[in-house]
Image 1 (cartoon, rainbow, N blue to C red):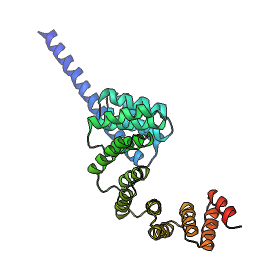
Image 2 (cartoon, rainbow, N blue to C red):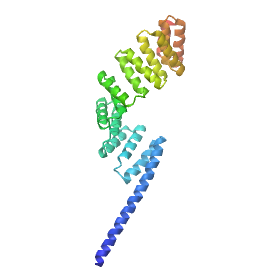
Image 3 (tube, helix red, strand yellow):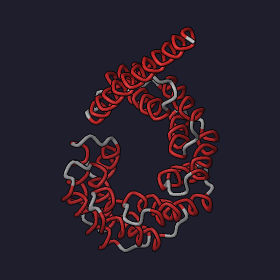
Length: 274
């Protein structure tokens, strides 16, 4: 009876020590996670990696920590390490977001087929990942799979209809399809959300393509107003002024473009201004 009592007491001590140890580890992990999150928000990626290493030693089953360490390694140009850690996260839990980032890593390595495959897995697991639809659409577009690209851009916009980048991406697809009216519609929507010099310059190209030169010129003026360092906008405006017969303004624009670093401008200066 005494032996049994001693055994029971020993078991209770072991259990108590186990729970104290678990609680101590849990408390330490919580503090390390909090610290890592702050460091990540401050873009201190090397420090995040060190913190996450400690967390993983204490608990190697936290898929979110492998994910955070993966992104931190990616941001420090350690692509191999980033891929290893995203695989570690996926092995513990298959999340759409994890496959999305794995696709990004393969895209960075220029392994386009693999990137498309993992974007596809990402949206199968999480159909709300508009970024995955957008990125896959861009890859389809670069491979001239235009209908697939359009389907993806449409889906991305359905999920996030107030994203100017998505309208811009679909607009550039319409430009490649030579559907300038549709491109202009999308650039206009992008501009309503976010007035960027790039969007005005891009819409100007579509206007010029359908011979609406006054509207194109107006857009290029706005592009330059928003970004006076936009050498390409000066180049384009020089071309429009030249088409309109105003050689003086054209040469002035090309000279300004060259000052801003455009090598293309020198060709036009040599051809039309000397």
